[in-house]
Amino acid sequence: MAGNDASPTLEQLQDLLLESPGFTDFLLGLTTISASLLGGPEPMLCAITVERDSAPATVASSTDVARRLDEKQYAFDDGPCLTALRQQRQVLIEDLSIDERWERYAREIAAEGIRSVLAVPIEAGGSSRAALNCYAPGPGAFDDVTVRAVQEHSALVSKTLRLALRLHVPEPYPEHLRLALRSRAVVDAAVSLVMLQNRCGRDRAMELLQLAARDSNRRLHEIATDLLHGADRHGPGSAPAKEDRS
Amino acid sequence: MTIGPGNIGDALPGGASEQRRVAAEWFQDADAGLGTLWTYFYSVGGDADEVTLDAYLHELADLPPLQANLLAITMREMDSEHHYWDHGEGQTP
Image: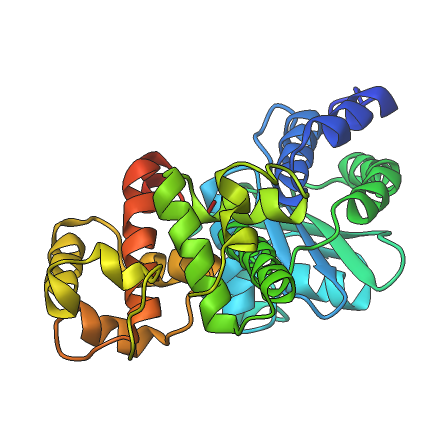
């Protein structure tokens, strides 16, 4: 199978970078572009694996089958793509059914009907490593022309991938936990401010905030935010700061 | 605890046990899981561990009045922005 001549223009890759809200989305887009460009008369399945620092790998796959083919390798920590990723060298399997080196992997994925595997490292820079993995149903699917096309493609997407890695710094915590943490920090700061303004204890300050929320029927977080910004000093939000202790 | 004028306890004619019963009822009817509730409670300044919160919601333990009131506020706020935490995993303000 010969690779499609068309290669993604840099502009196409740039658009993908700009339009992807997160790294995973970017990688998924890149995988889809790769699969559609590299696939010839026979369909080619693509997956891209990226390991950054010591963080677990991100895998994006053009199809569910490609995803399973990749995940199987992680299950027993060995496989052609993991080798390409970790040793940064190309692995080409002409026919998985007679290849002795990958016997175990072949057994694991027998049900997927894949005979040809090609895994090519992608230069990711820094402490990151990446590989482009291609799978095809027939044996000997990756001839010289196709291998060269995949290599060229890997070289081409390398720059964009490196930009994406810099742009999308991994978030240590999921979104909802970060929001909770941010909100908590605002409330804590507001409590400290009320303590300072009233020379009162922490519990009393918290109580004053709660009273303000109840009286104004607003959310505690909003009141805390207003207090910190010095807004609403004479409105309901200022009640905690001004209230006399009785 | 002493409840003087201006204390939030004034707003609770039913007293602490009634407040706890209402909270337990809310939790039973709500779609929110304990984790979601605790995270929201935490985000507005709550200071009680998840196990204690769980026991309180099953009327097996008490919370300090300030924390019980804060939990009531948490529930009220979650009610008013149901669409947030319903879809996300415990969205917070």
